[in-house]
Length: 399
Image 1 (spheres, rainbow, N blue to C red):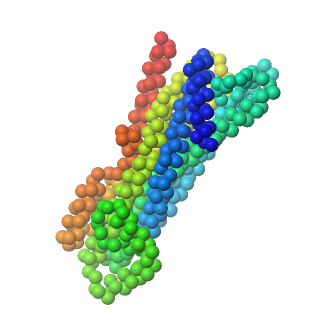
Image 2: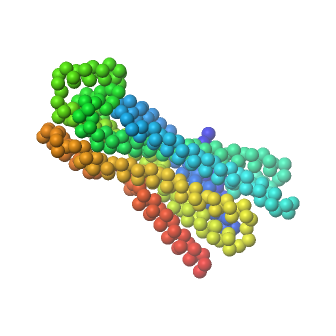
């Protein structure tokens, strides 16, 4: 239904934009905006269908990692609350903006009185006369329903992707905490950092790691007690405890790398389209807003354009700033490893720690479209590019 709604919006707004060529700045801008956003939403919906198996696999993997590696500080809970708050805020903001777009014709008609011309929510080309009074109500309801259906899935996809990014960031934060506390955990004899165990293998092969992780979850309830009692009977040294903890943390890091790669593949196409087209949308809306303020336009029309600008900025910022959190947390891994109490460990531990620090020196990041990394710098470049493009368009308009 969502894909069909977006296809219909792309066709009707494209014909309106190319064939009828609206002369009013507001109508032309809204039509171009509707055309571009419908393309983004269509790409998102197709990308979600294409990668639905990968997303399910990623969610299962994150659940398995959460079960295998403990979080004594409750970091995952804090990140989960943060993700829920961020997703809810975005849903409310976007839905409010869509509702305002649907109600704008009614507000304009009420403010303009009897002389005001009846308008529909969307500036679309339709193969019949839209001004007939008996069909206005049905057309209004149909366009509002199509708009809500087309935008709904895109908003939910944004919330889903951002939630997954935040959950991956939480795992990196947990790994940082566990690495820093290795010496304390070994000294207290709390060698087990998880409810289960993972077999001692440092291979980076995805299938081996995941298979070991699933086998560990099956026997997690018994292995925790048996490993602790065996450690006491066999007189396991502090060096062995620290090395065992390091191996577990390296396995945790390898699984996080796999999750980041899977997430990158899932979000790449839709996010790249969104960030690329949002530059044009932001520029178009700012330009239209400036032109409308110079002329005589309704307050509701100006408000509609004004409200859309921060929505674009928030949408791009959601992806870029949460992606920056992954970079920041993974960049701390080397510092956490240096603070783990390594001077008192044996040479075996130090050699493995050096290898881990070498790999951790390359911060994890999510690259979309093979060109753009989700980061704070990318968000700044998007805003800068939109402003520069606006200056060019406005100079051409004034001259």
